Amino acid sequence: MTSKRVLRMGMVGGGRDAFIGMVHRTAACLDGEVEFVAGALSSSPEKARASGEDLGLSDDRNYGTWQEMVAGESALEASDRVDFVSIVTPNDSHFEIAKAFVEAGISVVCDKPLVHSSEQANALIAAVEKHDVVFAVTYNYSGYPLIKEARRLVRDGELGEIRKVVVEYNQGWLSTKLEESGQKQADWRTDPARSGVGGAIGDIGSHAEQLVSYVTELGLDSICADLTTFVDGRLLDDDANVLLRFKNGAKGLLYVSQICVGNENDLRLRVWGTKGGIEWHQEDPNRLKFQPADEPERILRRGNAYLGDDAARATRIPAGHPEAFLEAFANVYNGACAAIRAGAGAKGGAEYDYPDVYHGARGVHFIEKTVESARADAKWIDAHWSAN
Image (cartoon, rainbow, N blue to C red):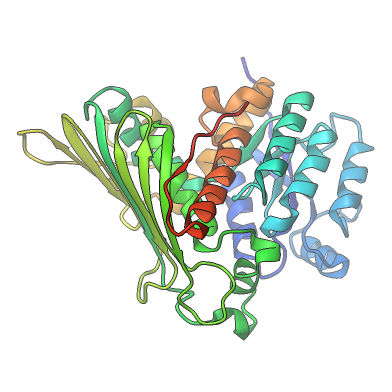
């Protein structure tokens, strides 16, 4: 049995003018089960406090730095401190901040990619397991109802044995050297010191890898990656093409790009097995194409009674009404919050259906392996990952 008490949320990053901070706060609080009560909302103490004032935080929980927040929340009685903290800072700061809150016994929801290296990821896994807190990673696309339905179709054998997977994620916003304009998102995402070893492959390739893993539950065997930097002077890849071999013998193709002029957020997944195939498009997320062998094509739509239980639980409004991006984020938060209420601890992701620290670590491993393969002139390399 779980309590439905309102959970107290803190946030690090996501202050004034931060799109993703607004997304996370809106999503977490969407269903009235979370209250935003504390934050250190910028790397600048002055801006952090001004942002907290904008959002109505009380003075005593409107912190200038995340270090102050860890100390301040830890000093409170357990019944008063935040139940979890959401980390929405650039990638380079995730590890230090997340580890500090975990060691304080506070659950964490962290933006992706999880950290900069597998060494950091393994250290974070060890801390999460030692302190037995809930740790979620916001791979939000796995929160869509029809992605959950796609997973059910695979699990129930409706596609048969999986043979082929294609996932693509194409954007055009970095087709010019936008980072020189002062645009904050472009600036840190193209800086190896802050973004990590991967550019497009880390920023959106990590989403693509997680989507394939979530829907198919196939383990990677090996990969062959070709990473390219098309924009002169850019320090990280802005285009990636990766061949995939899975442990069951299936083959796949993952390609992502941020220089596809005219594309906005074009994430697509296609999976084929011995008995059928499915296709899903993020820009039309309430529609899933299911093609059984030797039968007419079926179009499955969100909100209908013929969908499975997981899709139904992830749905809020009747069929025919658009339900999408914010709600998908909210479903990740709802899973993590259910685990927190149940005291599920480090292993709660499997039961409560949210991407956890292990999924985040696997994503970091994938980024590293694609970069390793590309630097070896697109050599096939072992891509196995294990939590051990």
